[in-house]
Length: 274
Ligand SMILES: Nc1ncnc2c1ncn2[C@@H]1O[C@H](COP(=O)(O)OP(=O)(O)O)[C@@H](O)[C@H]1O
Ligand SMILES: [Mg+2]
Image (tube, rainbow, N blue to C red; front, top):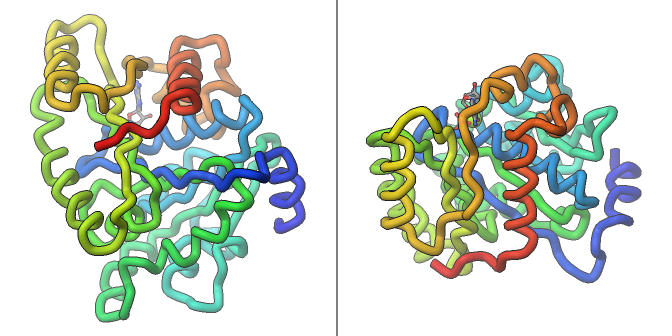
């Protein structure tokens, strides 16, 4: 595995360190996993070297990429709780894609209790992930929909956080709690943490409500909001069946276009200040 990382990183810009982006929201079903997979794959298509870390015990990113979490030799769980396991030991490469994954496992649910009481527990992921910034252009952390020690670890390890919000009523009020945690993490462990951007997802063109929610997201978060909107498409629901990102099984679809556009925004815009 280390060899293929080395060859992949030959394409990476060696003069610059990669960027770690936590994809987080205090809610399930907002498009975190879909964004990690499809934004990551779009960046791969643009020649970037990408690693995605599945930090959700439900392992939906792992499963969506056709990996059986029960059969993986090493998962993010061992990386976090065993000082002798490096992040590199757990990296898998999808056979046909230049796309690297650290899989999850249901055992990760126990990490909350296993990490409690450990000195520096908030920085466990940071310590294991930081050395890989030399090997990858982008590292995405797919967060669980909770606000526990795993998400705190993700925010402590990240350079920035990308927040997907569904364009549906009442969904973005929970973001307040995430912003509170982001501020706490800044105060206590990671003062440099930025907001990469707020991403509007699941926008349904058939409803007036999506437009209204999208407008209020813009009013609330202003310049933090990406111009790209991810609309609701049935093709995304097929993703797990294909076990590959949408730009591989439906490269001409609107959904693939939207994630390509988001990737371009990410490449061209500097991280938003907030
Ligand atoms: N833009 C979209 N349009 C339609 N379905 C989507 C879209 N994005 C994600 N989905 C589907 O919605 C469900 C939740 O998305 P997911 O990315 O797993 O959210 P999260 O990781 O925040 O829980 C999945 O079944 C996924 O396939
Ligand atoms: Mg998810």
